Image 1 (cartoon, rainbow, N blue to C red):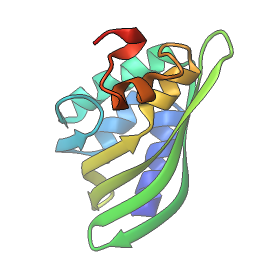
Image 2: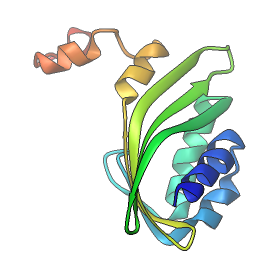
Image 3: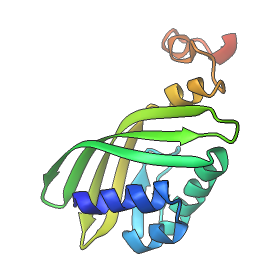
Length: 141
């Protein structure tokens, strides 16, 4: 199962190959944690992938540690992206995936996207603090 995740990291993120999404996914794949609703099917994940690749000119997913149990793989990862103007941002996180026969059946993604968008200057540095205090971002709320 680790080899499937490593192939996904290389082909989908380092090589930015959208066809790999279809090759490595079940036709009814469900990906959680990448938006308000699960992404269902390879086409939905491909649309997400396209958005990320539009934001970053270079991407990579680094797998640090992993555990396997049955069809499940848990991995601590770092997503790294570089923008066209050379800014780099990263998000620490974890992926929990159910994998069978070299295909991802479902995934649960947990990444520090607030931290990543703060690094890019798209969110104020005190975003998390404001939210935890019941304030809106930028003093709204």
